[in-house]
Amino acid sequence: MIKWTQHYALGVHTLDRQHRELFRRMNRLGEQLNVDASKELVDELLRFLLVYVDVHFNEEEQFMQLHEYPHLEEHRQAHADFVQRVEQFMHEDRDRYSQEELRSLVVDWISTHVLRADLDFGRYLETRSVTCI
Ligand SMILES: [Fe+2]
Ligand SMILES: [Fe+2]
Image 1 (cartoon, rainbow, N blue to C red):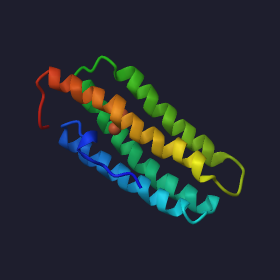
Image 2 (tube, rainbow, N blue to C red):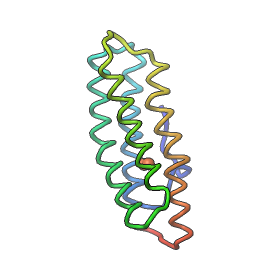
Image 3 (cartoon, protein in one colour):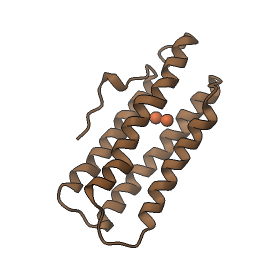
């Protein structure tokens, strides 16, 4: 279980709200992992997560574009790589996932990405005196 706290806040309300929802979906995945879930169930939860990831990544990229964020392209690439890795993983022919690989694939990636790359964008907005969107 990984809790969204103020440490993850960018100061952009829409994106912060979406990050909280992402963490909520990630935790639902985490709960299932504790009971040695089947691939079928995990895939379903991954799809549920990806639907939201898609909405969020798009909106975040639009914000970046709107505010002329200079690292938009590399950020967009990081988002696309993540989605591609998860999709590849779901296409693998196997019965189970290990908790460890899912943790590093999903939980570690999302929390690190929000803490580093997304917060960099938050700091960029601060330098441009953009607050409370
Ligand atoms: Fe984000
Ligand atoms: Fe991002």
